[in-house]
Image (cartoon, rainbow, N blue to C red; front, side):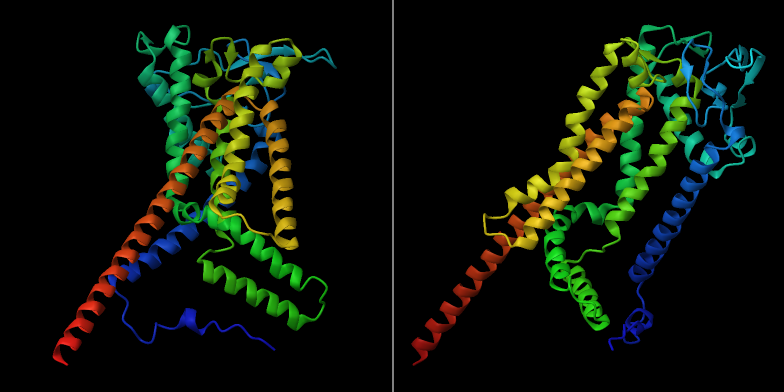
Length: 402
């Protein structure tokens, strides 16, 4: 029976002494692993925590006259050092069922330390508050102030909020790209890999023999190794962007400077679906802009892969793999469309920017790779011509000696 040999991972490369470069690579790998585990644990912790009773209040009207939706709205982030200031942290509301007068209040968070102590949450401390501080910093930078405070009534405030989301999405994209650089380089290769993977799986589909399953696994691992791709890299890429997305949900709903922001007739804290039911069709523009961008960002790698390869006959397995991939993409698009209808408008705007950057990133990596292949081909052709010239010269000198 086949037995995996792990000694190559434990050996010291034939007793070769590790260079500083080797140690740096090792440290970087472990750093990414530890950060990845921390991010996933914090995200799961924060998601569960936001649905607990002490983190959630019912739908009420905030100080700007807007409705606030759970989860995660019982804490309000008020960054006074950046000019944000909230004059109201509680209000009264008559319960529709009991008729009782109930008091709702926010636990204001105005410092990074309070983000940990008030919420007792690493998710709020490491993701939500820094993201809120970054967004409010950009709003403070681009908008006007009145008596040292942010002025939500100024004409520049809504535009400043859009710029804040724009630059924040760039920074988030840069952070995730730093940890998924190799995966992005191999994005197109991953598309072609799925068809080959489907062929191997089809080959052993009707086999229940354990040895056949091991051979299938060996062939798959050999395919990954030959293509230089880690099967877990694409999964890690998806997970790394999720904490920032969940943090953005909490930021838009909990940060006072964003809750009072209005762009034209669109309020960032409002949910498009709820507003469309009330006849505010201006919110439909978010969907009209977001949908084509999301479709292109998800389908672009597949489209580029199709144009890159020369036309050829596909096997039945490759056709099935391509069809399955297309169905999955459509399912994801439907899910994303449903979600964007039911999230705060500020998050929808963040997704619009994020999808745009994803398209630019995919095209950039594609053309960089194409340019690299072209350079390598020219270099190889030049070397071949040089070898031919040397061979001809040697042949000529040999003939002259004779």
